[in-house]
Length: 111
Image 1 (tube, one colour):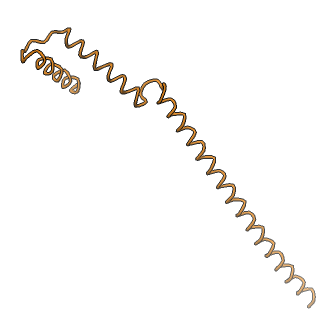
Image 2 (cartoon, rainbow, N blue to C red; image 1 turned 120 degrees about the vertical axis):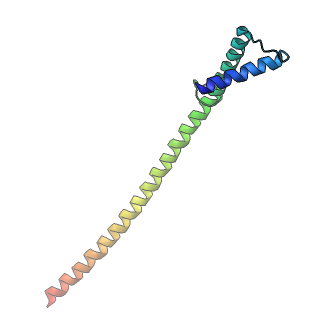
Image 3 (cartoon, rainbow, N blue to C red; image 1 turned 180 degrees about the vertical axis):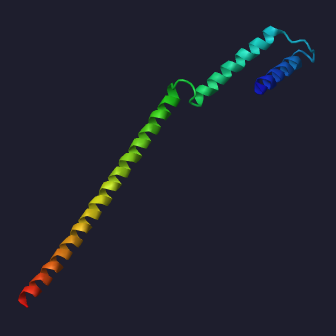
């Protein structure tokens, strides 16, 4: 509400300056100025993505979705490679451990 009052005061000052410093401001002039500012505000909100996505903002949103999906895909590929590498190392360690146990078991049989 304080922002609206400040904006109204600014509008009143601008109209007074345009009229040569007179203090009389017509309601029609203020209403026209408010409508113009509302159109500008709506256009700015649409450019920033606050309005319905059209044109450039729609392309930007779609591109950002693509980038996120591609990033997630790359992360999954990395995780898969990491887990396969970890699994192969675990198999190698398991194989080595089993061979050591087999050697120990054979030594016990020979005694």
